[in-house]
Length: 108
Image 1 (cartoon, one colour):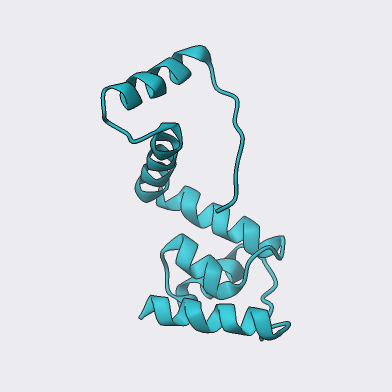
Image 2: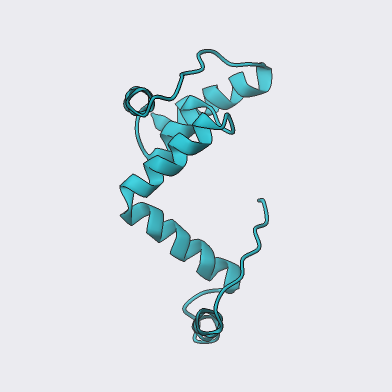
């Protein structure tokens, strides 16, 4: 799992530490993961925008973009077209092909 570093105001840091001490979260990382996950679950447009941006930057495949956006591949393809993002068809290499196969299996 990749590591991300963030700077937060003291009040948020205190609240996270307090929540961990109170047993609400297992640790600080658990608290931050929970809050970010909840944000994207409740904000569909932010989730889709993030997936579109990553696909446009060629950081992820269409299948991964669909999974992150919580859409099927056809819906994601249509959104990318609406946003003027050029579609990349077909995997670039075997690793990408395997990723596409795994993502497709997960969407079933």
